[in-house]
Length: 276
Image (cartoon, rainbow, N blue to C red):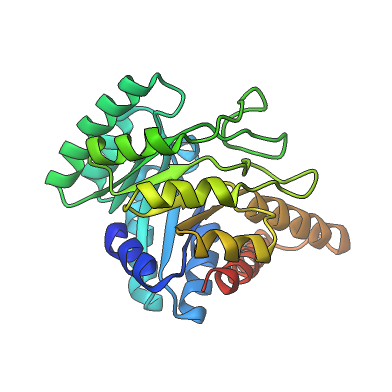
């Protein structure tokens, strides 16, 4: 498995984005890896702390290693959106190659100090760290955060200070995207992203990739985004297609599981073509 800092620095240099796709079990992880192998592109497999009831950190590491080897995929296993430093440290110990410490809901100084702590431990173990500054709103379709979350754009001045002081390898910024599906055309602040990029040299991350038009994605990449997260669309599409499958005929569970791998693969392929 790869270190995502190496992936993102290469993407930044060559002006493309690496897709970070959330998985919840074996079927979703395999579907994402199949797409990466087919496209011959690097992929970040994101496993959120929210899904620890689905499988353990060690299970995620074992499956990722096996699938990467079997299918020849250049893969990074990333702990997504974790505000609990204890779980972050457990993921590092389990073998994750990158972690996201999410202190975006905390006061600036507390977020900075916690990120510094995480970076110290992670870097000593050869693990990359993503941090977040600003707040991303969530719609009712999101499984990250809640509809009570309020959007707060990332300050370019604060981003510059945070990137220099925290030691993080990549910074997730809030520029108008949301967690979940959009009810209307997304208002993504490319101008704000350009200002942040002018102040921050480290790789920038865009959360809330589900449903963003290809044209907007291309503009974000051109303005400096080199990692884009997709979660909700994977779930919504796979659930809708599974429902259609069950309405036609009641299949064996093994057939449902295999079909779900293909549903996830289809979504990941779609976005990988946008990001290249």
